[in-house]
Amino acid sequence: MISNIKRKLKVALSNPRLIGVKLLYRLSPLLPDKLYLKLLFPLKVGYKLNLENPQTYNEKLQWIKLYYRKPIMSVMADKYAAKQYIENIIGDEYVVKNYGVWEHFNDIDFSTLPESFVLKTTHDQGGVVVVKDKNELDIKKAKAKLERHLKKGTYHLMKEWPYKNIQSRIIAEELLIDTEKGDLWDYKFYCFNGEPKLMYISHGRQADTTYFDFYDMDFEKQDISRPGFSASETKINKPEQWELMKELSRKLSAGWPHLRVDFYCVEGKLYIGELTFFQGGGMMPFYPEIWDYKLGGYIKLT
Image (cartoon, rainbow, N blue to C red; front, top):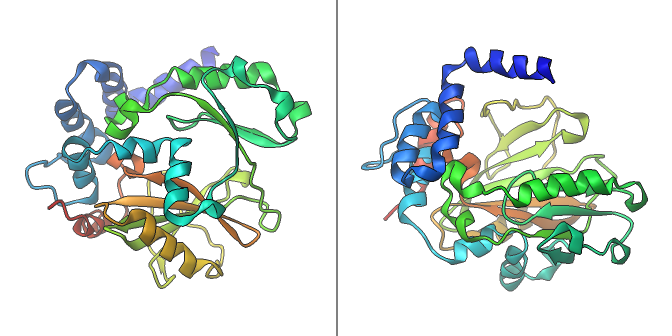
């Protein structure tokens, strides 16, 4: 434990920006949204936030956080409530099956659940427990993790307004397994006013190295990367469901200045992963930087 603390301290001291970010996270509940974002943004992205005349993708997402707020956005960001929203637009065949929803871990009746499933919190990121065999589940460990996430609030860290009013709950849903790939690939489409313009495939998590491979809407690979994630050398063929993914993305993102629509594809069947308004909290640099401006140009704030 002491060595781990020393390692984290060494990393922090070698990166003054990281110290500033951690300090702001602590102060977040005390600071007004606009001031907080103006302080945090340059530490995370590397340039000053311009809210008066935003030009980049990341800048415009901060503007949307502050000035574009509709109650339905909280429904769409809620991992439980979003299922009904998605079903109403494109049908229930694209919704991951739900087994139950609870406010407290102790309310879960595991005897009613199948042998394999996924537990996740409805209001944040990272509160996930994958259960491949119920008989081997470490109940104590799962409880500690999920109850810790139930107490966490996603809103304060990045001021993502839709998360502010989401009720923290636990859901159990079907465990999706792609036996062909041995990994669950995530297809993420950047959509603007109902039109997908760019996407990336997240894969390799089962091998402990996650790759992001970016493609345009003709499935031509793009030379784009994001911090901490590199492109793979894997030759990826256009998915058979490519056109259907684009069609469903258009339907789900229609009327929104920006929405990221995520898919899983398991043995030829599509499922919606999640709907996201703020990719990386709107504080995720792109390399080369021109893509920050290109994607920003697609967001029409008027």
